[in-house]
Length: 390
View 1 (cartoon, rainbow, N blue to C red):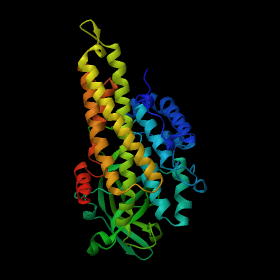
View 2: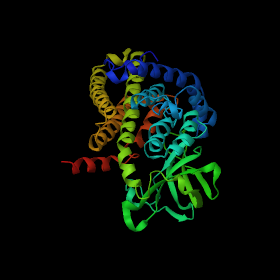
View 3: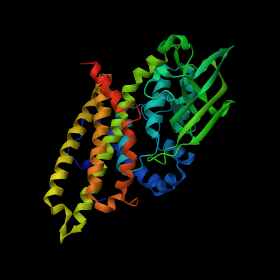
């Protein structure tokens, strides 16, 4: 690609992306281009990555970059996680489920786990020996987390977990799963608890099918079944039961910001490959870039992408400083993923018929982008949350 997605908008790097964060981005980009991209079609066909890729990412320092060094991480911040996710998006290997593993699963253990839990799980998450997932969604409970039915009943010094989950990212490969359960169904949200299940060490756990999705084919997404799965009560996250809903609410802003990371990265890549394409493609004896409509369309998209990037950079800076509130995170998730869909659609149109062919990257991006407006809380839910703040 002649045009670098990271430089397509011509903006200076924000303060949070300087020095070692920029170096990490460069290293992650090389890793994704050299180790993952050559095999990405294979992963798309198999509808999942392999454990070798996760172990290689761990060895390269790309897992748990924001976890403290004493737990096997790199001691960074969300800025470092952003650099890795942006590299994934800019190279175009969007199905690699590192983002959820790094900046959703691991932080729950860091923030709410006991010292023993941190020492036990975080180092293995950092090496890729453990692959993380979080099991929130159920067949009857999506964005409404208070509707969760999965039960965790105390049985001596164990919990007995029963229920089913669906749409679980990393679901086929994950061997450490944070399960959203009801420890006291009569208390509603206050009866929700997060319990960690190490799938290699329990009986009664089953993986359902790897779900057949429109896009993000290489990212395994599964149904999970818990049939009286017994885990020690020491696997509860937090010092007492009933804190799960509060824990989820505290961590959702970072999850939603991370969705914005993937969105802005794909926006920049879509623009980069489209600009390259219209410069090379000829129609009626001249390059497609020379048509006024092409120039106007790309001018609009670059302007909106620039606005999106500036907003995103500001959200990251605020988040690193501890000041990203849930409402602003909801704005970032909904607006950037909406913009992602718009930009990718317009860029596909500028490819003409070739944009509809799977051999062109823009076609895959078109499929992959659609789910961004659904997971992490639908964009309609985001608007509802924003509306409540007015």
